[in-house]
Length: 147
Image (cartoon, rainbow, N blue to C red):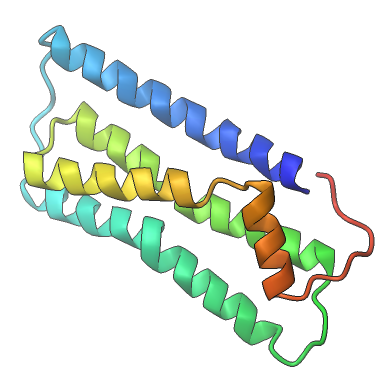
């Protein structure tokens, strides 16, 4: 399960990092950016906070609430939960790449980058984190899903 989640993680993180690097290279070369309305900066800032912090918290709370009366949680349900966490959290690096691409003001760009770093670091599906969540949610050790 962990290896499959790590493949999903890399599948989403690597393109975002390449976009961010391309945006920095374009800025270094002095390529111009399209003008954006000022309200976009705050909106993307709030969206990055939602995808890095609020969304995953709500998903965890919903999963815990849905399985609160069960003595064990099926491995397949836990795997789907972990994939949902990854999908929502790993939108944030794309917001960061957009902030770099469109040269957001320093305050907004820095906040968005911090949210992206948090999402990329905290939601990495390491064996330690997955095993902790399995123990926390009492995941049954039945058949594990590989895909």
